[in-house]
Length: 253
Image 1 (tube, one colour):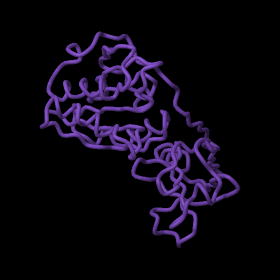
Image 2: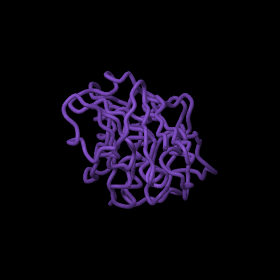
Image 3: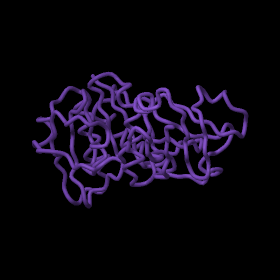
Image 4: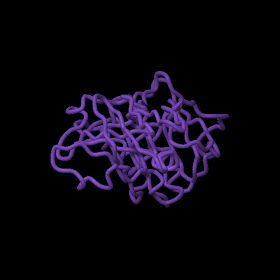
């Protein structure tokens, strides 16, 4: 029996999370459900994909990831996918395409009626439970040729500079960019660097948060290998005036 993880934009003040879990438990009460996040910004596919992408590979192979972000029935199909060694059940709204460059191994369209009002409970939950109990994708849906795709925010890199963007603001107000350590290490060898963001310019990457004093700005490569901008014991989003999609540049001299 596989695990089910649960990611949604339901928030924590309503009954929606419990209702979805109750549906799964009525199918089999022994299934383990692990919450990843339920405070994804409403309908925000970029936020949901970042959260899930950051952690889904940490789970055992064949884990079922239930994703209820922008999961209403008025403008989406609902799909189950095997991809990168895992199962996903979600709305076909482009979120799954942002998780990995790999093509899905298999995709099926989940059956539902247009008058279904709570698709996470009535469509996604039964599909996730069936997969966790060993059903095949063919058992729960009809083959589908592909998933809906969205283009991720792309990094631009030359020998002289890397141009990236803030792709996530975490709970602490830290700004996570799409500038990755692998690209930075290759291009920065033997060169001086300048990092530009907002009205700030910095000339070094710190090894840890502890390299700065309270109230000072830090730049680190985080556990995801992405450049992160923060204020120690402060909120970088508020203090620096940066937000999702703000530009960040690394210049090499």
